[in-house]
Amino acid sequence: MKPLLLAIGILCSAFVSGQTYFHVDNIVVDPAAPTTADIISIDLVGGLSSTGAYVTSASASVIGSFVTLTVNSADLGGLAVIVPHTETVQIGQLASGTYTLVITGTATGDFAPQPNMSSPFPAGRTCLLATALSSSASNTQRSPTR
Image (cartoon, rainbow, N blue to C red; front, side):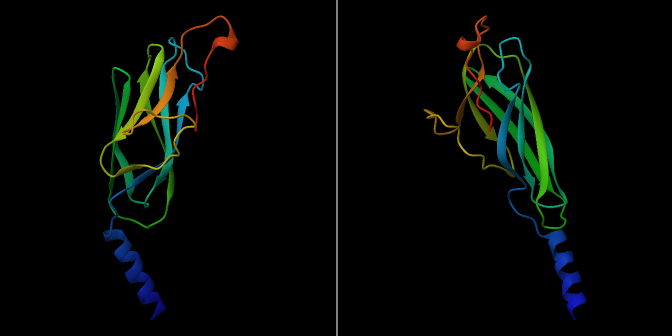
């Protein structure tokens, strides 16, 4: 009886899917202390909700001081286990300034802790993604990595 119940459970997990397939637990800006000359990328570190879950697309757009990452996920079904996953999104070069990072898309959840700074934008998180080139290390501001 137990093997039959186990087989039914595994079969059901292949057809049952959740609404959030990629859970973002951490956000890492690369390089950690970017300058206006650096090519910037953002690593979304987290887990996929099953062995059949995957990221279908990931892209970035920069409009003014907003960096929007659009990440779409899907699930073909599989065992309901958390599968570690890192999705890297290329941003490119940015002008010096403070940017608000917004994560959108389908079946992707942003569960990363907020940075240790106040965010004036409730729809996103404020991150210093690019700093002005400086000849003095003491004047260079660091980008928060999480």
